[in-house]
Every structure is written in structure tokens, then in C-alpha cells.
Length: 421
Ligand code: SF4
Image (cartoon, rainbow, N blue to C red; front, side, top):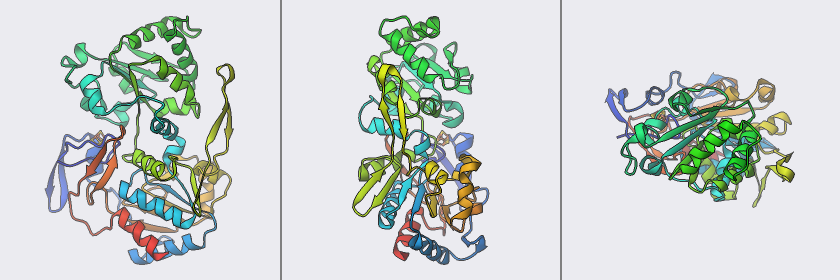
């Protein structure tokens, strides 16, 4: 059995058929996972200024760039193993650099709130065995974690849910559009306005407190009745929800307080984003947006200053997030590992990347690798190299090495880069 690194569900029940050191076929993997396991469509080659070199020269050049940089940043690691993430954090420490990942503009704060134990959470095996009410909020699992409903939540039989989705489980979708997941939630789709999550949460909290909600009372009271009856409920919080409520996690904490039988789980896309958050949290007490300065650790949160009468005042001081660092043009070198910021950030922000040296460590050609000063290819984790990763619910999962490869692992490359410094 192998583990699929296609998303943070990290399915570890994948059968592979290998022929001539190539994965010919996968069984149990979804289409996305099968494509990921079959390897890169376009393999990255070592280069300096987009000209081919050997890996050693690329590592030496990367070290030179980082050594002279006054304000370097390390970014990514959501598609890197835990072992590589730890090395990346050590490298940032050695350089006195900023380190951040994609969670700083998606699920980071939610995950930090879970680490601070402000929410009840649970494991996916608990969901399969016990859950009777499943709420997909701002999350289209069918598209982004395609086996979520079939392996763990809606469709499987569980110890206390032997009659599965036909009689034992209710799935609810709250979203701005009728997603593929919402189509499965027969009759329990609640459409909200874009950025309308806050209003919806407040109305639901009112309904759960016995008050008549100000917003769509009929629908909200119907949903509150379903949630109240749950024996073991789970809210799968997607980026639709976290983008909408932004830094105001307290509003979600207040809703969770009204739902004593519910658990909250972040829906994570990149296979090891949660691993990065855990590793950085262990080292610094923060999940992202960190700068090392000697022995000190600086962090730049967006703070919630005030919540009078359930409104919020936010102070944005995100100078250590990639978004602000690029907007303010405050970094002079960037190392990207296991991530492709160019494909997800707006063009106005990534303009600054054209004026600074960027180093890219990845197995495959990405949009980011095409503009970088130095590219260093690594093995595909979970296919050409093993390691560990953290599933979306926090469970540590072993990745397997399935085929032989001459490419160094991401962990090995970061170790060699540190030595070259
Ligand atoms: S759901 Fe995710 S981890 Fe599972 S097979 Fe599909 S891509 Fe891979």
C-alpha cells in the first residue's frame, strides 16, 4: 500500500503497479491523486538564470544569493515532507529570515485556533465511525479532496453509523454556489451571499440561543434544528468560510460554543500544509508569518482589536506574510520550496518577484520556476522518496518510496544548502 500526496487527505490505501521503475497504474486513487502519483508532466532541471547547470552549482549559487541578502524570505513547504519543513525552519533561523507559507492567506488562523484548543476537533476515523451531521461550509470537498465523502464522511458505513448516508447521516452544504458537494447534500444546501458568512453565523448563533434570527429566519431555524439534534456533528471549514470571516475566529468560536456536540476540521488542500503549521508552531508558537532575529522570533499577525456589539476592528500588520512582503517590496531574495506562489497570487503582487533573485526547489516546472534565478529539482515525495506528512485532521502519515530516483529529496537539498552557507 502507498500513500497519495495529492491532497491533505493523504489516502494511504493506494495500490500501485510499477513497471520498469514507472508507476503504470494506481488503484483506489482519485483522478487527481493518480495524476500526481504518476509524476511530473514537465520535470524541473537545475539551472542558473534559466541556463542548465548541475545540481551542485545550483545549490552553491542559491547559497550565495541567500548569504548576501539583507532581508531574505523562505516561502512554501506545503508540498514538502515534515523532515524538509524542519530543515527549512532551521535554514530560516540560520539566515535570520522571514518564513511563511500558503496558510497565511487561507487556513492558517483556523489551524492556529485549533492548536490553541479553542475548538473541539476530531480525527477522520471518528467522523467515519460516529458522525451523523456533516456540514461542508465554504468547501467543495468533491472537487478539492475528492475521496473525503466516500472514505470518511457521508458514504461509508461506520461503527455507529451502519446505515450510512441512506438513513444515518445528514450532509449540509453552506456555500455561495451550488457546488458538486452541495448537489450531494440532498435538500440541505444553504446558499449565502458572497462574504455573507458572518451574517449567517450571527443569525445561526441567535437561532441556537432561542432567538428569532434577523436573517432568513425560516431557513436558519430549520438548519438550527438539524444541528441541535446531532449526536456527533462536524463542520468542515473550507477557505470560502475562512476567507469570508478573515481574522475574526472569535465569531466561529462563539458558534462552536453553542454546538456542544460539534467538532471543527479545516479542509486543507496542499498535502502537508498542516505539517508546516505544526512544525513552525512547535518551534515558535506561531503557524506562519515569522521572522527569526538571533534568538528572538518576530510574528506579524493581523489582530482583532475590538469586538463591540459583534462588529470588528482589524489591524493589519502582516509584514511577515508573503502578500505584504511583496506589496511593500520589503524582501530582497526569496526561496520557494514545494509551492507555486505565482499561480495563486495576483499579478500586481508578484511584480516584485521580477526584481529580486528567486530560488525554486520543486520536482516539477511551475509558473514560479519559470521566472527564477536558480532552480533546484528534487524527488517527488511519496513516489520517489519517503518521509512523513500531517493529514488535515492532524494525524501523522508515512509517505512511501515507490520507485528509484537519482533526484535528492527536498530535505537533503535544504541540508546541502545550509552546509553551502
Ligand atoms: S483524495 Fe486526495 S489523497 Fe486521496 S487519492 Fe485523491 S488526491 Fe490522493
